[in-house]
Amino acid sequence: MRSNVKVSILGPILALSLLPIHGWGDSAFYDEVYDSNGRVRPQYEEIMRVYSKLSDEDKDTFSSKSFRDFKGDNALDPFPRVLTQSEYDGLRRGVEQRGTALRMFLQDYYGGGTGWKKVIPEDALHRIISRAGESGFKGKLNPETISFPYGPDIVRTASGKWAVIEDNPGYIGGIGDLKIARDSTMKNLPAYEKAVPMVHEPDEYYRAIVSRAKSRAVGQGCVVMLMTPPYPDFEDARMARIFGDLGVIPVTPTTGRGLVVKPDGVYLRIPSKTDAQPSFEKVGTILFNTEHKFVDSANPSVRQTLKIFEAQAIIEDESPSRTANLRNAMLPDAKTGQIDQRKLRLALNEWETELPEMRKESIRGLTRVILEGKVATNYTPGVDFIGDKEFYTYVDDLVRHYLKEEPVVSNLSTRRMTKIAADGRSVINEELLEELFKKNGYRDHVFKIVDGRGGDGVWIGPKMSEQNALDVLARIRANPDSFIVQRYSHLSVIRPLPNEEGRIVDLRLISEVGPKDMYVTRTPWGRGVPMGGNGKVNLSDRGREFMVAVVPDPPALCARKALLNLLRNPLP
Image (tube, rainbow, N blue to C red):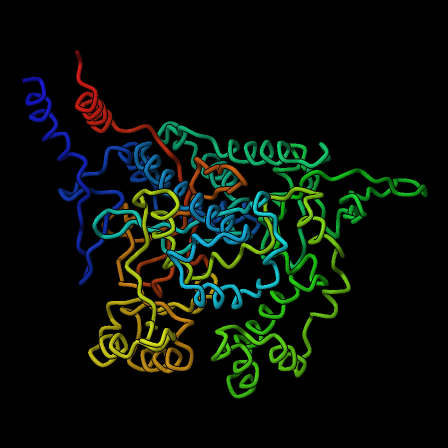
């Protein structure tokens, strides 16, 4: 009897929290602010009361002030984005699953295990690792020390379901913006203080990272943050200040401090304020705010990644007619499926690159002592390849394999442009090409280069012309292993007022994966771009950051959760 009563009450409450779809043009999308009846979602009601009173001049002034607060890096949208506690809890669980499965895979692979072969074909993995230039770390990396920053990019699809569009390990953006996004918003529009009842403060993330770094420090040495130029924006300076206030010592060419590698580990060189000799302090943990290839490129294993990086940069910047030899050298060998490093080195010799100078400025021996466990780090060398978009296609299955669970937040529908032939070789998928290009199916898909970063090497089907499609087809035929194709899904939209241009939005849950556990920020980072743009959520395309806050569940959703809990745990 009780069970029936609970279900009858639950029905209308469930209806309040359905995930509706709004149509805009020919595409359906999830509206973050309004439900299917045009009502403001409960978590946005107070925000809308503030925002609806702002004039266009108020909004422009806010954006200008936030631009100055960010030192010209970017500006904030005057409309905060919020997630309910329940939404965040689901996202966090999905990111924890994904990060844990990635760590377990890396420990399996670098530990000499073979379990990963049940998910990823061996030739595919070797191809992916070679493409990242990380083949030299096999047999050198202690699997029990593996750590890396992790920030998957997440979108909400038209059905209201969360999906990961790519995995970002290592040197990721947004870390230094979590606090300033909140501070700038509240300073320049203080009315939001009461309208956004945040459950968590962004400072919590920074404290957690420092605490984790101290707990892993070798020999109880100090914690430093290593930064190397060129700095893409002022985010690095913000991070130096934030972490410096928490006792982490920034190390850059301008601080006068440096790292010195000795037989027993790493030492911080502290210059004297007088003419005395510098002093040295043992370093226990290095927080990387840079990439390994820019720090110790004298190391043979790291130098491979730098050569790949240099070749990609030249190919992107120079005309195709001048880079034929280099592009040919970057193609995987037909027999091994890997990039021939000797062939690449010879092709690079035709160009003047920064490689010799970078080798000269390297912190020689740093990679070696990290691999030997003489200093801890939050970012182990040899893990960047898990950000490859071909590798991405296997991550859902890695979750199922290692955790024996279904992914809470899964991939978008994705296909590779190759298939396995009867003789075991990877060959181009002609049937898929016909579907996509002869029948104009490209308009419903997104094409991505597997080793591209950010918006580089991404083509959005609905935004493509016929000539764009022909160009992409030619690229795929030349190197099919380097492409994936995803079903196009309109990203969710924020459009507070009918007369405003909507913004398509995404999220990044910045995390740290450690040797035994992981930490997920409770302050998401978010971006948005106008719907009339190129379809890529990049700040360079008239994009803005959002202050993203986790807020308490609305009363109706709290009641729903309570009833669901009672259903699972009936009263005696």
